[in-house]
Each structure stands twice: as C-alpha cells, then as structure tokens.
Picture (tube, helix red, strand yellow):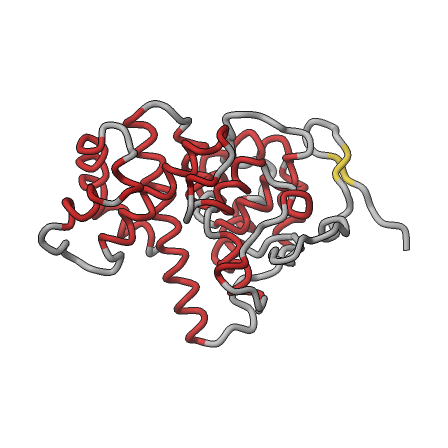
Length: 272
C-alpha cells in the first residue's frame, strides 16, 4: 500500500506517520523512538478543539503545553523546518496546521494504556513535578531576563521526558542510563541537552549551560517544597539558597520571592 504524504500549513511536505528513522543508538541511550505518547485528557481536549472549521489558537496552545509528550511530538514534527531560537510552541502549531494536528491525535500512543494503578499514580506525580518545573523556569527566566521564558518553559516541561516516556511505555532503562538521542528524537538540541544534563548542568555544552543550570535550579526548588504539601516547612528558603544549583542563579532572593508568590495557584493548576 502506498503511504500518504501530507503538507503542513506552509505547504512543506510532512513525512508519513512513522516512527523516527532507524539510527544507531549509542550504548547506554534510551532506545525509545517517537511518536511520543500523550495523555488521554489531552487527546480528548484537542479532538474537541480541532473538530470545527475554525480553531481558537490560544486554547489549542494551552491544551498542548500542559502535556510533555504531545508538546514534544509537535516540536519534533516541526523541528525539521522550523529551526528557530527562541523556541515557540505557538509557531510550531501554526506551521503544522489543523489537519496535521488532528491526525497526530489519532496516531500518537496513549501514555496510560496498559499501566497498573501504581504506575499511573507514579506517572501523575512525575507529571505534576515536571509541570511545576516548567512554570518555575518560565517565571524565573522572566524575572531574570536572560533566557526566553518560552524556551525555559519548554525545557522545564520536557526535561524529564525520557523518564516519563520509559515509565509509560515499559522501557527497561534505569535513571542513570537516560540519554535521549538527538538524531532519533529530532528535537531542538537545547532541549535534548537539558534532558541529558539537568542533573549535572556543569557538564552541558557551553552554549546550553545557562539553560541547563536554570532547570537544575528550579527543579531543586520544586523538590524542596514537596509538591503535595499544603504548607512549607520552616527554613525551606534557606535550604534552597544553600543548594549549589540555586547559588548560581542571578537575583536569587528576587526570583525566590516571585516563585513563592505563584506557588499556590501552580499547585492547583498542576492537578488539572
């Protein structure tokens, strides 16, 4: 059967809906190949938004940007033709077009399919954490003014993508082996380097060090506030400021105040 080729909104041919091209996966790398999985709630929301003749772009972007897997899939599909810095999820969605997005919702795997209740609970916890890391990275970068808030948000949202993907798809990688493949995943290099080095940002390539350090710092902050707690323990600010990742953050106290002011609203949002 001859495979179908579609075009995006810019008239650029979109490859048939296959997994990534076969490439050599280095030893110790995650062997997962796209398409990336999406949450059931994301697919339902997108199906409703894409059903009409016209689409509310803001609502569409809002639905996509809460889901690390579908966000990664949108960026993967558009990255071959939209190699831009700073990153923009909205630009990627516009480039792909309504028909391509609709087909994506029908092809991508579902994150929770076949998982036990215990693994689903674990997945939800990690999704909650990664959403908060994304929001914190966005707010911190807007406060400091050195990195595009959108780029910081996307780096935060996707920083744990290998772990989330492997958890949902039964991959047998261990945490220390997560090495996303730049070639197989076809994602922007800065996002792949943040996935690879957010636990050890000092090893990131020089051009990506600041972004990797930003994600490491806000992840340390999210870990310290213990996501599910309703109140913060005494001395948590001091513990955060003493962390090596946080000490390298410019305007530390100003950023900490900004993040603290948004925390309650973020906790509610991350549960949606």
